[in-house]
Image (cartoon, rainbow, N blue to C red):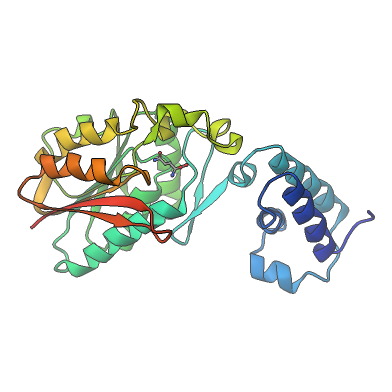
Amino acid sequence: MNIPYIYEALNWASSFLGESGREPQAAVWLLAHKVNTDQTSLHLDRGERLTEEVWNAFQKDVKTHASGVPVQHITGEGAFYGRIFSVNKHVLIPRPETEELAHEVIQWLGRQKSGSVRSGVDIGTGSGALAVTIALESESIEMTATDLMAGALQKAEQNADKLGAAIEFIQGDLARPLQGRMFDVVVSNPPYIPVDQWEKLDDIVKVHEPRTALVGEDEDGLSCYRKLAEDIPAILNRPGLAAFEIGMDQGRQALAIFKQAFPDDEVWLKQDINKRDRMIFVEKR
Ligand code: GLN
């Protein structure tokens, strides 16, 4: 092909990606990033010709993604709750399920008396998506974020800086470094994939995303929730909310773990938009 028009380049790339078992729509994300525009403008400009330089670079990116590298690792960016987060191999790429968790927490914050929610913590923050989003969506909250991995904390700090959120970062295992402190809001999307399911994941996840952010290192993948259930009762204020993302097969068991840890409080399970068990909430009223 000579230097193609935008629509021709997209047609080529989406069929190439589709034939490689990837999402054809990724063609649009990759080209939009390459020419530094959004998807709408790209479609409006579809009758324009690419430059040779962009065409060559775009073909390379499309082939890289076809070979299994996530789009977000090629662009270095992942979208979360309307903001762009920088990502790399040290952090989980932000997922839409987690946006739903953020949304629920933000809705809860909106129902509290103005200014009454002062402190929050995101346990196992990864890219910082949850911590930064909650910090920026609430006027009164001071956010803290923990992660076990130095590489993740570095990325999270970079995202907080870039997006203008003042967050305190602490390195350590789940809630352990928070002992002796109290928070009005606790959120966590810990690793929860059972060990034996790791091998079955698509290469695009298994080869490129951090195992430590994905695998709950035991048979049922629930080990992090068991640890969190031990530590969180002592760090959650009353009134306060704790919110967790869980795997779709973990609803019943995760609910039982947190009901046992908070016998006198409201504990409930919520499904995501795909009707899969996805979130656990604990509210101290
Ligand atoms: N939802 C992620 C996935 O299935 C898992 C996230 C996690 O382990 N916290 O890829």
